[in-house]
Image 1 (spheres, helix red, strand yellow):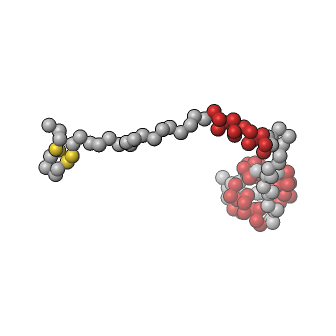
Image 2 (tube, helix red, strand yellow):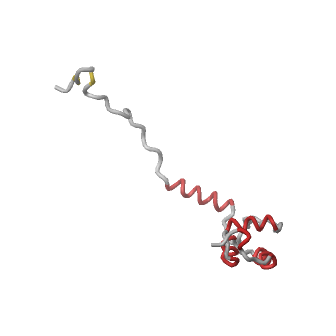
Image 3 (cartoon, one colour):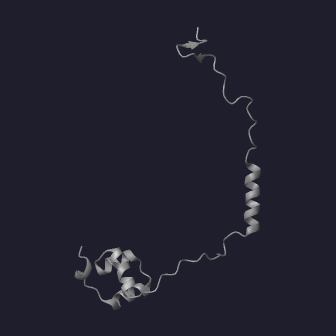
Length: 105
């Protein structure tokens, strides 16, 4: 893949693709260069930054009240906490004395 000054591109085409909202990958494929080179061209030609997508509230999104209601339903279905065990670990029936185990016999 050609790099640097060997890449034949037209700034007008680059601006058109950028304004149309094409991704770096799509622009790179159209111009026949790498995505990192598109980043450098963006700086060189002072193309505007892309706006980050904003989260819009859609008509079918649940309201905060509906979310709280659903959470209460889920909590009601969940089983309660298990009863604590009296002993988490069993006491070993034998111990290491340094020369052997005591209590195995």
